[in-house]
Amino acid sequence: MTKIDSRRPESVLPTPSHTVGPFYGHALPFRGGEDIAPLGHPDTVTVHGYVTDGAGKPLPDALIELWGPDPDGNLPTADGSMRRDPASGGFLGRNGVEFTGWGRVQTDANGHWYARTLRPGARGRSAPYLSVCVFARGLLVHLYTRIYLPGDAAVLGADPLLSGLEDARRDTLIAAEEEDGTYRFDIRLQGEGETVFLEFQ
Amino acid sequence: MTLTQHDIDQEIAARHAAYEQRLADGGPVEHQPRRDYAPYRSSMLRHPQQPPVTIDVGKDPELVELSSPAFGERDITEIDNDLTRQHDGEPIGERITVSGRLLDRDGRPVRGQLVEIWQANSAGRYAHQREQHDAPLDPNFTGVGRTLTDDDGHYRFTTVQPGPYPWRQHVNAWRPAHIHFSLFGTAFTQRLVTQMYFPSDPLFPYDPIIQSVTDDAARQRLVATYDHSLSVPEFSMGYHWDIVLDGPHATWIEEGR
Ligand SMILES: [Fe+2]
Image 1 (tube, each protein chain N blue to C red):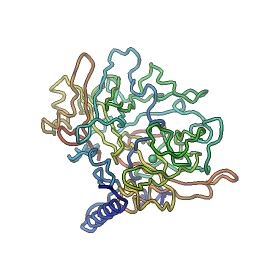
Image 2: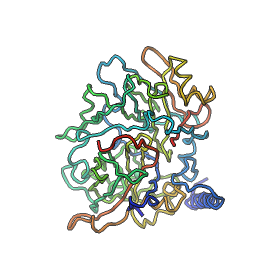
Image 3: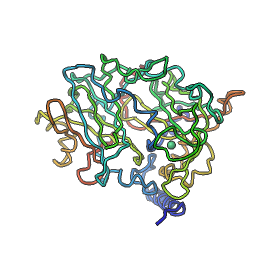
Image 4: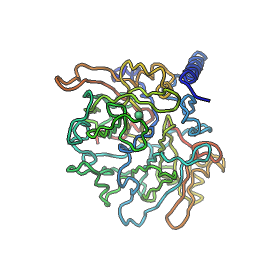
C-alpha cells in the first residue's frame, strides 16, 4: 500500500531507498552546484578528490552533496542554491551573496569532483566538518561521511566520532592540505583505505 | 559465460530465502535494501565492506546532519511540476498525474521541501547521451520535474507514463516502468533517492533492483496506487504515492519554514 494513514503510527514505515542510476544528469546536477561560497569570501576553501570503487577505479557517475555550517558554526537557512530563470526555465545559479551551505556536484569522466565552500565552524561537541552524502549507480542506499579539515590536533582529538576510531580509519575522514585553502578528500567506497561511512540513530 | 535471466532469478530467490530465514531466526525487518546485493552486479564493487559507524544523534542536538538545506520559490519555476509543458509541443504517451504526501517517521508532513523527479519517455528512452537503448527520443520530453511540498506535505506532478527499458546487465534484462524521486526532509539524515513503480508490473519478479528490497511489504511501498479521484477527466490517469523518510530528525527544530 502506498497510501499512508498518518494517524496509525504502525502504518508509517519508511520508503526504501534505490540507486540513483546512471541517468540523473538532466535532473540533479545544476550550474554552480559546486560553487557554494559567496563570491570573494575570505573564508573560502576548495575541497576536491576522487571517488573510487573496490578495484581502485574512479567512478565517472557519482553524485556528491555537501552540507555544512558557516565559519561561525551557524546553520545556513537561505534557499536559492539553484535559482531559476522564470523566462527560460534555466538555472540562474547562486546570487554570489547568500550562503546556502549546500552544494551538489557530479564526478567528471575521471572520477574527480571539487567544491568551493566556506570553512565550516565548530558546532556542539564536534570538531568542524562538512557533511557529505554520496550517490552512485550501483549504490542501493546513499552513503554519509564527513570531511574534517586538518589543523588543530587537540580539537580533532576531542571530536566524539574521530576519537572513537583507529588511526588508519580516522585518517580517511581528515582531508589533506595541499596549499593554502585547498584540501584533498578521496572517497573509497570499498577495500583498502575504505572511507568511514556513517549511520545516524 | 553469458549471464541469463534464469541465473539472476536464482540469485534473487536465494537472497529472498536468506532474508526469510533471518526473519524466522528473530532478525529485524529490513526496510532498506542491503548495499551488498550481487544480483544487481553494479553493487559488487561499490558497497563498503566495513560496517557503518553509528552516530547517536540524541547525544548531540547540534550535529549539522540534523538540519537540512532550504529550498524556496526561486529554486523552481511554475511549470516545473508539469513535464508535459516544458517544450513547444506535447510529448507522446499516456498522460498521468502522480501525487502524494511526504512524511517523516512520526507521520508528520514535511513542508516546503524540494522533490525532484526524472524518468524515461513513453518509449522507455532517457534524454541522456550515454543511453544505449535505441527507442525513439521525444523532442517534447526531457523527463525532469521539480516541486516544493505544500503545508500538508503534498506534491503533485503531471507527466507521461514512462516505458519499461532494457539495460544490458544480463540477457533480456528489463527495468519495470518507474519514476526516479529525490527527496529532502527536515534533517540531512533523512535524505532519500528512490524509484516509484506502477501497479501490477509483470517485470517486478525479474528486476534485481526492485528485488534488492527483500522484505515483501517494504517492496510494496515502492509501488503507487491507481487513484481514480486523482485522474483528471478527459486528461490524465491518477496515481497516489506517499513517501516516508527514514532517519532521525531533531523534533525540537521548528517546522513550517
Ligand atoms: Fe531509470
